[in-house]
Image 1 (spheres, helix red, strand yellow):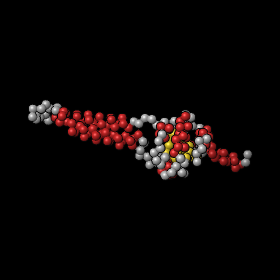
Image 2 (image 1 turned 60 degrees about the vertical axis):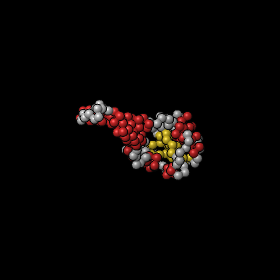
Image 3 (image 1 turned 45 degrees about the vertical axis):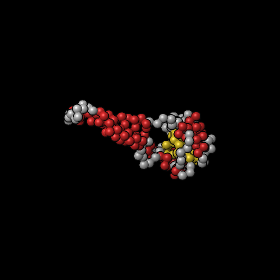
Image 4 (image 1 turned 180 degrees about the vertical axis):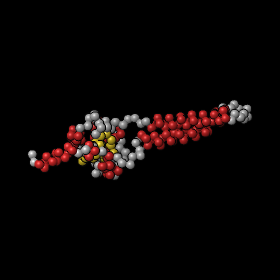
Amino acid sequence: MSSESIYQTHTRDALPPSAVPRIYGLMAEFLQPDQVVQAAKAAYAAGYRQMDAFSPMPVEGLAEAIGFRRNRLPLVVLIGGLTGAVTALFLQWFSAVVHYPIIVGGRPFASWPAFIPVTFELTVLFAAFGAVFGLLALNGLPRPHHPVFNSPNFALASRSRFFLCIQANDRHFDLDKTEQFLRALNPREITVVEA
């Protein structure tokens, strides 16, 4: 063994863990939307669950192919709307019954028909807040940088190319085996995405 190879082996072993590049995953690049859908179906059938697909346009069946079946945003909007309705009813009831109990036209203090307009408005307002902030939270936004931006051709994801990224935190992920699996799907290119 030459002194140079010993030095290279020794220095590589001496690198601190922070200097060794971490892998986010493997990204396969495809030219056609049907190719990425077929690749996503094959990856899901092979047991991969931590993956994401990127395309410049909506591709029918792609979300289902990567295993995206359930959307939690409607539940967040419902909870926001119910919170708004309960808040409006409670505030109006508290002000009309506890703080300023005034009899108007012989009606009871808690005259709920008078509470309907404000309750409706607060229901819509809180549901809209739930939709906006729930969408941001569920998508992990704002996120100014994502590891897939490190891929050299990823800028084409907004123009003409389709990408499938299998993440390294998937329990079936093995760098060599996953690369062989992706190569069998005939992508244009496969790149290692550093975290």
